[in-house]
Length: 201
Image (cartoon, rainbow, N blue to C red; front, side, top):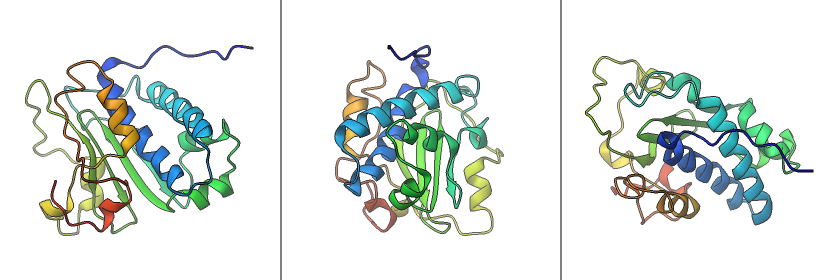
């Protein structure tokens, strides 16, 4: 029986979704409990779920609009989008809690994907691109900014562009401009390095 697939994701969200999917898949891969075949199925399911979830909440002209809606969050409660994709490869909730950080925030916005592990971890950039037209964010209170209120903003050294190998491969395969006008750090091999690393990429 052929599996029914939804419409393809909008072209303008492909690189951001690829970065988010590659990062979460990389976290599962680091534990070595999930096979490459399972990771491929999981990645495909997560990619489709995010495209469906974001299709009416993606605003390249106002990248921070809808940021809270698009945010993927694990905070002693598993994000339903991740758990649904994981169910496609037979991973239960208890297994997911063992494989993924108990505190994870993943912001998926037009032109930028970033994450934070732990409540006080540094915010690290996974994917960054330049908007076709300058976008003003002055005065905008975003989902990410709300979490930073009341604490000192991290220095530039702590905000890095990182990429897991599978994310880089996915992004390199995208048509222009996605494969050209992006900032990916080749020095970081693991998505988990960023939390304590002080390298400025």
